[in-house]
Image (cartoon, rainbow, N blue to C red; front, side):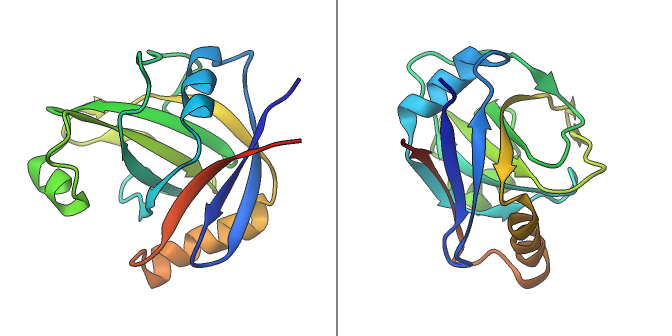
Length: 164
């Protein structure tokens, strides 16, 4: 039976529906599903291009490891990144209020084309594609682009189970 979740930009009042890719990323799907709901301040990527994300404390009892990885996400990809504490730049961690955490989870959605997960400090940054947006990508993409243009202050990216 397929599992679905809603992903919302609360302040902008926009949501989309994503189907979990249980066959391609079962460990990641289970880790995220068991931890839902999740949410946090939204950020727009500086380098990856068409991405918004929330940085969260680690929530899985055991990290899922790499599965269904990509460095070239496509529109509608929902991606899980796990960053150990030492990987992220000190100023980046301070800016996002996560400097006290031993590591963080980055839950991201990609809303447009031509994305490349390359970090100038560390190189390629593969992420686990664990879900795909199946409903509402166009309005979500418009809202995500507005996060880029108008700013992210006061906006939250929220992931919730869609039951039924």
